[in-house]
Amino acid sequence: KAGVTQTPRYLIKTRGQQVTLSCSPISGHRSVSWYQQTPGQGLQFLFEYFSETQRNKGNFPGRFSGRQFSNSRSEMNVSTLELGDSALYLCASSLEAGNTEAFFGQGTRLTVV
Amino acid sequence: GDSVTQMEGPVTLSEEAFLTINCTYTATGYPSLFWYVQYPGEGLQLLLKATKADDKGSNKGFEATYRKETTSFHLEKGSVQVSDSAVYFCALSPNDYKLSFGAGTTVTVRA
Image 1 (cartoon, each protein chain N blue to C red):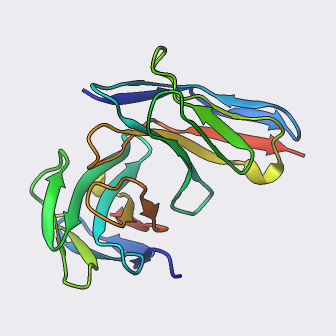
Image 2 (tube, rainbow over the protein chains, first blue to last red):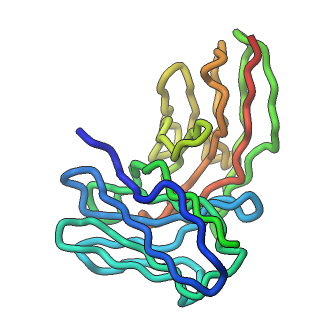
């Protein structure tokens, strides 16, 4: 059974640009959550999607957005990139909404220069 | 708000030593508690979990007991190996929609 797949693994962007990250959950999992990991702030919850709907959102500015498709794959978008957006972005999938037995992908390492 | 505090690292041990990583939490109600492990260059892996008071989670020789009276969920392993070198995160889920993580503890095991 394939795990959570995140693409790309590494990304370098320039300030002001936008970026889209992709996450394919484990087959059969319908909930996808996104987390940001930085040395200073640690792991912080961005948002959760279930059945193509955002269920919950963390305390991040509107530049951070996401969506989920009918096949449960999810994308997150960050617009007008800032240097502080440099981080490891982790996607986690769960069987159902609110099921926090989450399985994480390897993450996308975003560097903003 | 809900939060997790875990002991600061880094922790350096010799092989076969006993490992303890302290974790305490603040939450309303009865959260589920987790330990995740992150190996270099990897995402997080669920190590163990406990969903109610006095539950003991265990996996790969690691154990943690949900102690409501002390609001703690300390991770222990009796005999560590070099392969246990990683960053360990304590986490809680207060209302089943997100995980709140501690800052992480880096553990290095030397041969």
